[in-house]
Length: 239
Ligand SMILES: [Zn+2]
Image (cartoon, rainbow, N blue to C red; front, side, top):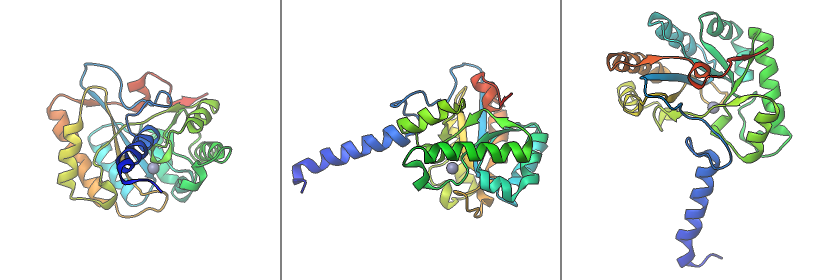
């Protein structure tokens, strides 16, 4: 049993361990880019856990109306559910990234299971969209050393980012999320939103409603938007 005096130390160590493995900005186990170093007012908007209809299509309408390119980290089995949405993402000039096949936590605890997640997600996206993503964002931003190693072995570029709103999962009002995401804007930053939840869909109307105001507000402050590959200076797709 841990004596009372040690409790804060144990909690602190657990917190530090969690931050090292799951922190958006933690580089403890290797490079985990969440922004590019630049002074120009350029940002990348990214969307995880989709496609998830009708929300992903509504989001594409918002982006396409404003001619803003974004990066979609799609879950393989969601892509199989909504293949035409995946094709629209690519055809509209957005970039498709890999976000694993199942988005199930148990599959990330061990190798080689997590390596298979990368590969199976990749195969699904190649089959559906005809492109082989170069960008990979691990689910929950889990970047244990073997996860980063597996991504490297697969020859993919790992991508982190900053969460637009920490409570997005419970869908706070769009205005609240838009305010917080706008405050997070810095030159070169990658912002994370979710057009789905895990691989289970779910309502995302507040996220969709937040994105237009974020774009309009930041455009008014002189920002423009690019896809993550361009921000980081790496290819979007593998040959
Ligand atoms: Zn995710």
